[in-house]
Amino acid sequence: MVTSTIGPGKDHATISAWEGLHQADLTSTDAEEAVCYAFDDTAAVLIYGWTTTADHYVQVRVDSTAQHAGVWNGDKVQSGNR
Image (cartoon, rainbow, N blue to C red; front, side):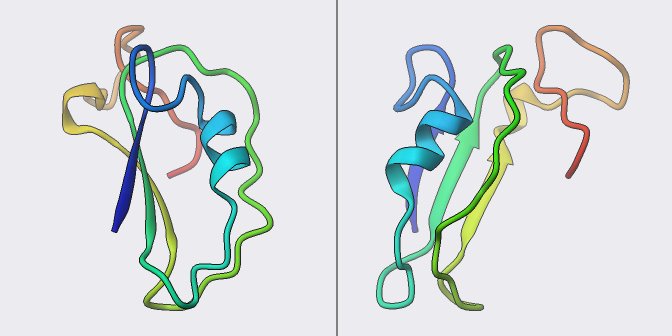
């Protein structure tokens, strides 16, 4: 799996920046993963333009250090859709 980090001082500043640079045909390569760290990223992101399979896919997740505990925390990643 190819992993990129998202957030201040990471591989990419925003999820949108990562998605725009990594769109690919994954059917003959590894899966792509974006790991988000705590930061304010309020821009909507559309994951689009990738070619995937059940074994070659896109995964966006939050690092365990940046997950909120079910209540609002301005220092953690907040997500309306999981």
